[in-house]
Image (tube, rainbow, N blue to C red; front, top):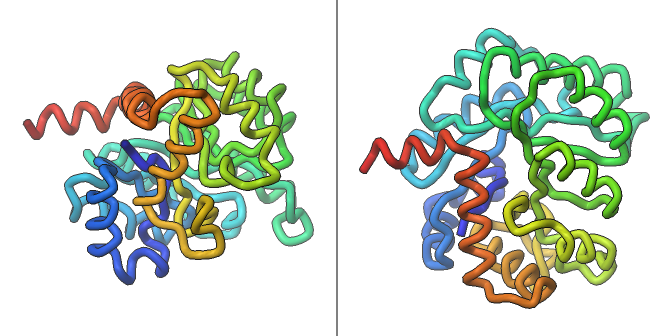
Amino acid sequence: MIDSHAHLSYPEIKNNLDEKLRLAKLADISHIVTISTNASDVVENIEIANKYENVFASIGIHPSHFDDNYDLNEMAEMSKMEKVIGIGEVGLDYHYLDEFPKESQLKLFQDMLSLSNKTDLPYIFHSRECFDDIFDIIAEYPIKSAVFHCYTDNLENAKRILDLGFYISFSGIISFKKSEDLRDVAKYVPNDRFLIETDCPYLTPVPYRGKPNEPAFVSLVAECIAEIRQTTILEISEITTQNFFQLFSKAKTFMEMKK
C-alpha cells in the first residue's frame, strides 16, 4: 500500500528517516509521498525523494505559510523534476483566522492555483472550514485532477468533491472515536475515488494515538476502512494503490521508466 501524504522533512521523522522507512517497508508500504508545506522544505523534500527510490515529493505552500518568500517561476521549473508528482499541500484553513488572515491565505492560494497553467500535475488540497470558498476559487482555474487530503468534513461536501471528479484521502482520524460522520463518508465514497495517508508525524491512528505518527501506520488506516466497508485490507490496499497511480500518473511513468 501507499502513504499518499507524509511529511518526511519534519524533525520527528527526518531525524530517524532510515529507520522509519525500514519499518514502513516491513509493513508493506511500497511508496510514500513527502509533502511540502513551506518554501524551505520544498527543496528538502525534493532532496529526500531523490535519495530514496520509493519516495516521491510534492511542491507547494500551506495556507499557514502565506508570508513565505516563494518564486512561482522557480516552482514551475521544480514541477518538471522527475520525482515531483503533485502540487501541494495548498488550500485554505479558516480554523485560526486571527493567526492566519483570510485575505493573505486567499492571495497565496490563488498564486498556487496559477501554477495550473504551467503544469498538469494534480493538486493536493488542504481544506478546513472553508469549503464554499475553496470550491468557488478552484472553479476559476484549469485544474484537471486533485485530492482533498485528510478529509474531515461531511458527506455533502464529499459529494461535491466527487462531482468534480476529484479524490478524497483518509487519515488516522478515521479511527478516532468521535469520527462517526467521517466513517459514513468512507462507507459512501466509490472504490475508484479514495486514497489513504498518515499525514505523519500527526494524526496517529488508534491504537497508537498520542504518539508520533509514521508511514508504517498507514496500514492501520487501511485496516479501519476495510472494517467500515466490510472488506479485506488486501482489497483496500489494491484499490488505493491503483487510485494513487491513476491520480499521480507521473509516479507510474517514473516507475515504468526505471524497469
